[in-house]
Image 1: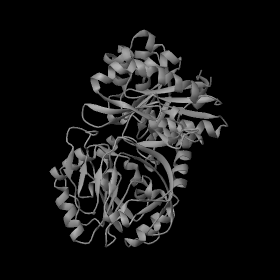
Image 2: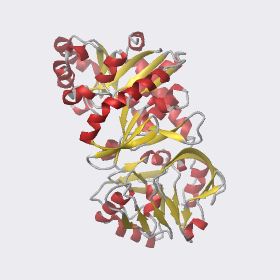
Image 3: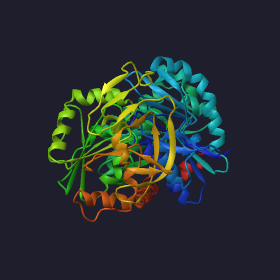
Image 4: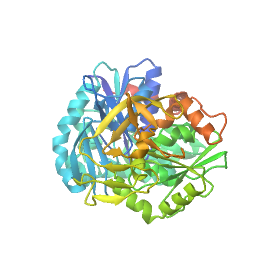
Length: 489
């Protein structure tokens, strides 16, 4: 088995994903064969990992997809054996080793965890094959002792697999001393012994001002500090995994093109917008519920959804259907991706109740198509070609449903020789099932040019690679990486 170290947070959204990615890149630069692992993830931002010998792929969290890039290796389904994709406030689809296992309400899932630990440990044995080091990311907080007996994501995994843990505290949200010391206080002794130290993340200003804080934490816990990580500006250039980040996004300075993106309750794979956000002349505005779609937007993008019918109902409740109709009347452009594409048609039907109790709803009527949900899920990486611009595309599909209708005779792309998506007669409304549509630099440049933006098409993948290199360099500067990697076992 490869040696391993695990990062767990004092809470959610403390920056574990970026830290693991950065440490993976730092280890790679040291010549180590390194792999990421997250036993359980909860996110509607999924990636497709190929399964050897199988034509279709399997789903993992996009965080582990990014971390695999940091390691310089292809993603595998074993890097994230359990993925929870929330569909309602109390229930989620459960994906195990890349495939849909079923659906579970929160209380039912707790009882299911014991069975899922076997899959986690099976993937754990496989992910380290041929590697020198595995860097593991926890989920939430190990201090949720009310859930400890069935835990598979934090200390439940660490104690079973014998992986030492570094605790991550987020100083930006305040109360970091209490969060680290409080975690020490309430953990049972067996779990406490697994923690070899801690680090502080997202520090702004003079690090020496926290010297007394380090002394206080050591007094309460006896744990060593591996360093204090400053606010990593380069992290903004990486794909975001958690929709929590959308609550903090605000529009920036005015640029040549404003793109409005309604934040759906079950928004999925919103990192489709990241390549557009990276373009210097483009402003991407994520519009939260309760706010109007901006009238000066040249393009509205309706992103993917884990619950198309439910999100379409909420879309109307927010009045976004009226905003979108006005945008269309003004001559604005519209793109719908996956669930967003389905919403653009005349209707969405779910006769088997796959998504929930509402089995049919009227669509937005901006494309002459209809969608019927089907039980078989399409999960695959694809190479394609844009029909309107005759340029190559690369991306992936994760969707239920089949969309048909007259506008599909004007496909937006051809995937593996098969037409995909639909375009309105005037060319201003486009729908596609393909995620990653805007990641193709040449296509993105031509698409933006069609909207009046000249000189687009930055090398987006190179930007991600440079951001990972910058983060790795920051971590080497501010953390004792020799000690961190040396404690792996």
